[in-house]
Length: 331
Image 1 (cartoon, helix red, strand yellow):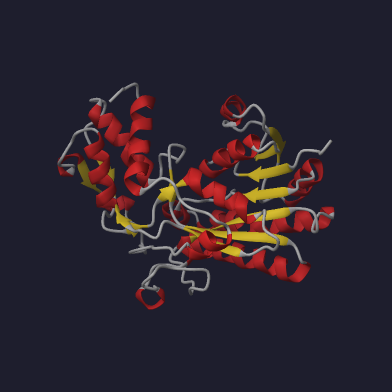
Image 2 (cartoon, rainbow, N blue to C red):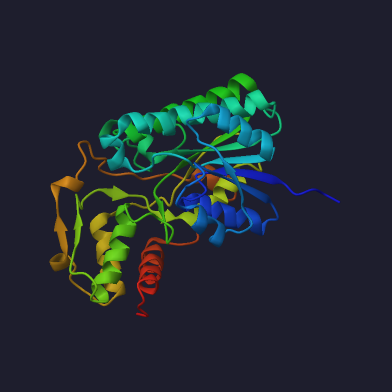
């Protein structure tokens, strides 16, 4: 009888962690999830939504705990999603962002090496399009690909770039299977309310149901390459099934502004003009904003056979309908 494959997920309580846990369980994996602290407020909701996940208490900033997590789970695959992942927050807390998002990846890689699983465990490192920065001089017309120049514009982007390069370094130095997924914005019903897309979909549902009057946002002109998180975790899994580790961009190849997201979201509830319901506040504007991000997923499409399934209008509709249901509406 063939034994189950085992996977360890950091950031299990986040958007990608939840989608990945579901995907791996559906494929017959034994799934372990890293949870920070015995009294973590998310423990109850995690065990309720994913009763099949075996919780391992560890902290990415504590190497000893990560060694114990890797030792106890003996994972065939590791998916590292743990990070301070909100760009705006990283400007207010750059040191914590560095400790978790950058140095935490080093702790994980070292844990795998110290435990003696460098040849067994395949590792997925969540890199990000924020490493590119979206400046004119390094922006290719067809979109950023795996060979594009990096110029991060936030503490989050800088920390992720360190994590990206240390992951590649361990791949080259120790022969470890470490694949980096350079993912462009991927959203969905599990997105945190602090992220602009979910903030909008939740507010639109509230406005449609008469539960709130407006939504307050920052800049509305930035453009992003937005896809559905459920599609993207499938690509992450595919990266670890290859014969050799590599880096892959996952993106839609389309870019849309926040204004476009607003237009579609309000249209979903029958409101043609969103302007009266949207206010702007400088408090939500970043010191250095990325104008536009557009990805080129050609390599992933060619080598992995990956394709996104949910388009931009479908993504917006999915999120608004989810939040309407969550708020008790049926529109």
